[in-house]
Structure formats: C-alpha cells, structure tokens
Length: 289
Image (cartoon, rainbow, N blue to C red; front, side, top):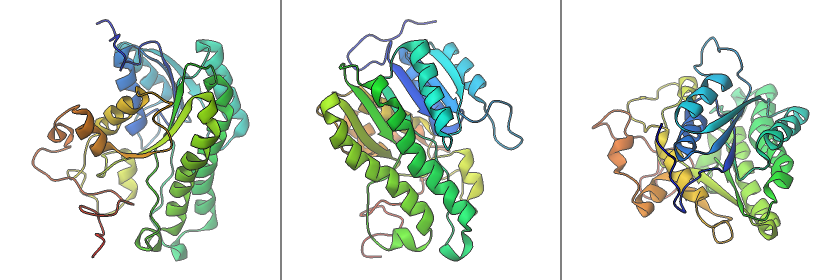
C-alpha cells in the first residue's frame, strides 16, 4: 500500500463523514479521500445487500481501507434524528472529530404535482432538506475544533426560472432547500471556521438513481469520479476564504487543472447530457429557448 500524500491539498488524517456513502457519488467521494489516507465514515441505510441496488456500508468501508484510508461503517437513516445523533457520536468516539461533512444523501422524483403523492413529497423533503439540516446540526460541535472544517451539500445554484419548477416542483423545492442551507449556515458557522458550500454536476452522472428516470441514455453521462475530484479540491481549500459558494464540478476541474474532462466520460465519444438547474450556455433549457 502506497503512503498517503502529505501536501497541503491532502486529506491525510482528516475525518470525512458522508451521508448516503454506500454507492454512487458518495462512494466515489469516499474512495478519493481514502487515497489520501483519510478517515472516512460511511453513514447510510444499506447494511445488507439491496435486491436492486449494489453496495452496502460495510462493502464500501472495506474498499476505503483497501484504497489506503481508515473507515467506519455506520447504519443511519437520515430521516431519524436519533440515528443521526448516534452516527455523529460514533464518529467522534472512533475518530475524535469531523473535518469534512458531505451531505450527499438524496431522494429524487421528477414528477409533476398531479403525479406526486404526498408520501413522495414527504420523502423528498425529509431526505433532502430536513436530512441535510439535521445532520449538519448534529455535526457542528464535532466540527468546531478551531482548525477549520468543511460542509459540502450536493445541491445546485438557485435559479427562479419557472422551467426548473414546472416539471417537478416538489423535487426542485427539496434540492433548493439544501441550497438555502448553504446560504444560511455558511454565515452562521463562519465564526467557527466551518465553511459551507454547494457542489453540483454540470452533466448527468452515471449512478443507480438513473434507473428511476425513464429515457436516460446512461452512455451520455459522466462517471461519479468527476464530482469526487471536484469535492476533494474544494475541501482542501482554506475554509475561512471559501464559504457560501455554489460550485459546478466541471468548472472546478478546469480551474484546478485536475484532469482532462474526457477521462470522466462514461463512454468515450458520447457527449454527456446537461444536468438540471443550470442556466446559460449548455443548459438543458437555454435562456433563449
């Protein structure tokens, strides 16, 4: 096993807690941190193999260790405050603190109001907005150690263009609720040197969640590693100087000169589809469309 990097942009020895970290983007983030020698907490619901979805918290934890990091697998339903508090307590008991908190757990339903039952609305709000809020709330004390810490919400920049609401009002409100947490919490937590930022993909990312969305060509996507690499760059910045922002993964990759964007293509030669909520050139619904 190679020695972890020790430069200023490394997460060696840092404690990262990830909600929904058993698969997809959360897993990619965990493995990227592990390559630095980070201590990674995989907090998610899946303990036993899921009948339709790959990955469990224990399988991901083993892969983190194999990649060079330390790992703690914690069963946590983001909708249950007691489990959230217990997950944070277990993290502190094992590693002593939290340096990076990634609010990655998310529910999706791209359905119009007429086709979104209240049970689904409640799930979207409970996981996306309330889950982000309660996990951050629970982790504040463990991040207030004075050395600087980062919270990253996987949520988009806010746009009030009706096109982003008309097709899936409940989902949009729930994701923008996560973004509003960035705005409010970044100011509240600034005195504690805790940065709070949003990160969102420029293009659709190939995850198992795509199975829930009809009509998506999974070849026209990017790998989760682009989000993981962008997040790694953000959480190794100075938290005092980098807070209250909304970043796009592609922009961070280009600015930091991390890699050729083509390396993240799910299938070489197939242009990736744009993701939701991004206005301007390259948008799914351009300004003048």
